[in-house]
Length: 198
Ligand code: NI
Image 1 (cartoon, rainbow, N blue to C red):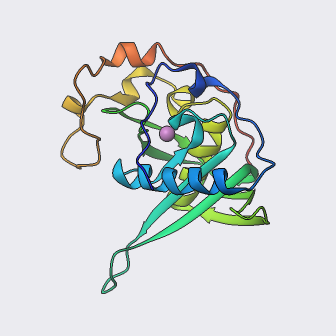
Image 2 (cartoon, helix red, strand yellow):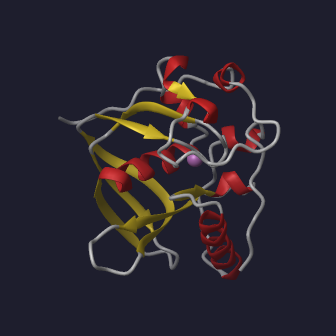
Image 3 (cartoon, rainbow, N blue to C red):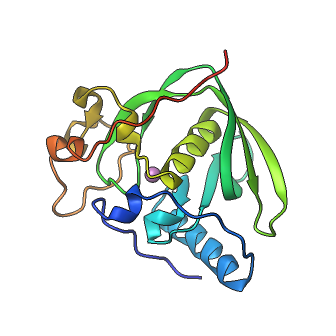
């Protein structure tokens, strides 16, 4: 397995709609493994293939399970050709993205989602999710449609750079040359609203 380089936040591949996967051969398996390796290396909870320069509709998610008295475990999900088929409820979340390191922002996400996808063998499945998993599913399927979380934010004031971020320790380290908030905000392309069932 290998850690793949993340594309720059300005790379056009982040703004493209990814293409459906139809071949589940060895090269796909290798890409999935490398995406997991990259996600862990970068301490992310999810990664979409276009973040590592692939045009394919693939996302991986790894949600840490926090149960008292248990070893640290992570629930992992492989999502090929994922699609959110139902969303309900609305909640404010605090979110970041490996493609925009050093920033976090507040936006509205669904409370619950149902997604359909294929696993790494091509078998279709449905995933009923809430909380962080639902948030990650919305974030990663957005990526595969060329949408970034800043596109779903309503005001620049809700975007924080690391110096303003506070002590929660969830902000990725700011690499050399981290842009200012206005520069990141100018990358924004307002996204179509999501339709939620109450
Ligand atoms: Ni992201």
